[in-house]
Image (cartoon, rainbow, N blue to C red; front, top):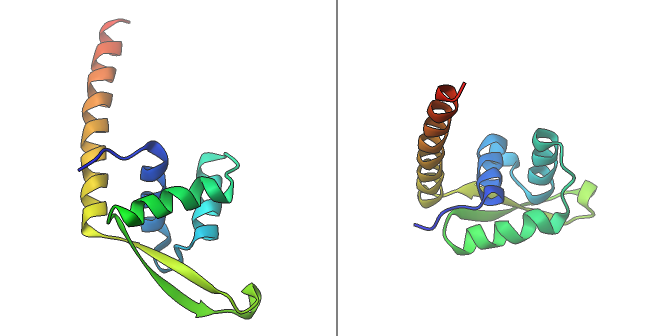
Length: 108
């Protein structure tokens, strides 16, 4: 299993938080709210495509809406492989943070 980039990890976590509302614009808005960083559509769309191609995400087309001019939303869900990738990333970060905190506490 390949390691996730920070952006890929953020996107997967945002999808998990948004549930049935996990579509491109909502994911982007959620990440902007959490990180405080302005994100282009491409900064989210390109990793979404990569994650789906790698099997970390599934997508379905939602219903058309008048608000969107009759266009449908592509709704994303995390696959088992995506969940395992998140768990593996968290494990690495937990170890790194633990070692970092241990090291920095001894230097005070």
